Image (cartoon, rainbow, N blue to C red; front, top):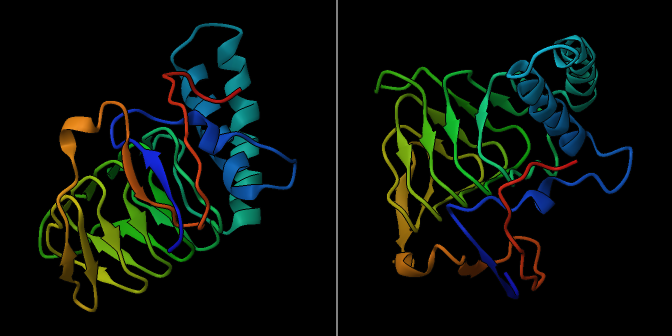
Length: 200
């Protein structure tokens, strides 16, 4: 992977979710989820808008071939570059600035009861399965087609079936408030500002 960028595990970078064009199923689906959740916490006329966002959610879910519930606990700055086949169990928790590739399942069914809790700035490769009440630490990486049934510490890379730790690194956690320099999954070098506001 070439280049680096500063990405925080705690402060969501909402620009990662910003829709730059109409036909962007991943970001449009996330926008429907975010908008529905905001409307749900407000009174009329926002309650009436929920029906619209439910329809938007259904449309983009079909287009994307993804199953991401409206009440999902998703940290800001989530990226779904290829959302087809992505399944997220309603009880799962996903931290800020994560990247989820195609055909990923985050759900129940592993040896540990419950649903996964995924930290911030976690990259999940295509076809990976994260099952049961496992915890994935900040800045971890999950390899393509891995089946994760045990906890993955922060900064580690897990791969295989079942997944094992193949590499471990120690993020500079003291700098995480301002964002930490990590490898860029897209090979670009970009500094992302962080805000506490969802995308428009």
